[in-house]
Amino acid sequence: MSGESPRRPPRQTLSLGHPIVRSIVWQAVILGTIGWCVWWLVANTMHNLEVRRIASGFAFLHREAGLPIGEALIDYSPENSYLRALFVGVLNTLKVAAIGIVLATILGTLIGVARLARNFLLAKLASAYVELLRDLPLLLQLFFWYSLLQGLPGPRQALALGGDVFLSNRGIYFPWVEWTAAHWAATVAALAGILASVALTRRAARIQEATGDRPHVLLPGLVLIVGLPALVFFAAGAPWRPDVPLLRGFNFQGGVRVTPEFAALLVGLVTYTAAFIAENVRAGILAVNWGQWEAAGALGLSRGLQLRLIVLPQALRVIIPPTTSQYLNLTKNSSLAVAIGYPDIVSIANTTLNQTGQAIEGIAIIMAVYLTISLSISLFMNWYNARVALKER
Image (tube, helix red, strand yellow):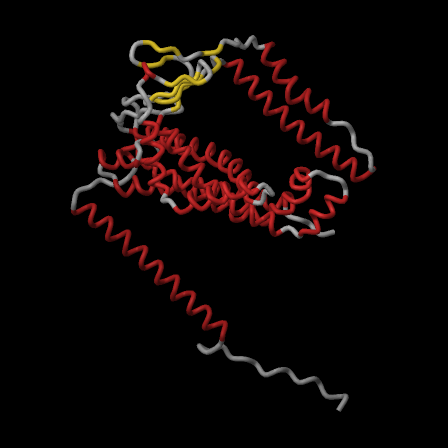
């Protein structure tokens, strides 16, 4: 009847068979099990350390290291602390990872494009490179490059390239400018000019989208990128005296030296990782519909402009995610440097824990360094992937 109040649904009672209760119980059991395992591991470790009278903690970081390091980006001597020695190792790892990622990206992109080239010989050579490098263990490749560099003649019989570049079993020597504070000021000005030029280009794009007219940015961009650093360079009185390597005694002095260990590690990581990045690039290009090539060709664009302006920007959404994994692999594979004597964080931390007996702390430091670097790379690449993603209108 119309005058009757609507019936309320029956009230559900919470029991162990209810999905919500069952979900909460299982989550509590799992979290409790994980917490118990962690507590047991920590308690067992602390007990074993106490029985063996091994001190725990990070107080050893402030003790004198007495550890010689052959390659460092900052001033270091064996009288410094373990903390500074480990920091040198972190910087050496970052140097290899940063340079390796840039070079592997360039080489991998070129090889990936070459695999799709219309030239038969070029495409087959690129395919052979990819198949060969991917199927050989990286450690074996590092040994190959290190043995090759160690097989070079000594400094007195060094191979000369271009007159001022020398190859020997002590390293690769090439000229460099005599770096001063004025050079740093010019470098900062160049970076500021690049950022200002990017902001100017984006502003021009917004104006073009709003009005249809695009302001000229080529000349202002050149002034910012080239003119501003040059002005700072000459105003600060930066000297332009090249530091040329010269043979004095049994070795070269002056210039810049690339050690065989660093060169072998860098070449091995770059060539190996580039083979995987090349496949990512090839897959990304093939994922773009062929109609995009035809439409670009109908506009009169050359093959290179079609690839650079039309295809690659669309292929990035396929290329970036797997390439991020390769960047992480390159960074983690740099830990193989210990096999050829390059002083990265793993090598220095291993020596530190052997001298101090602080094995747990040493391993924890290595894990924290690689975790931080990997998360930083992932965050940046995820941000970049979101920036270049195709947005529907």
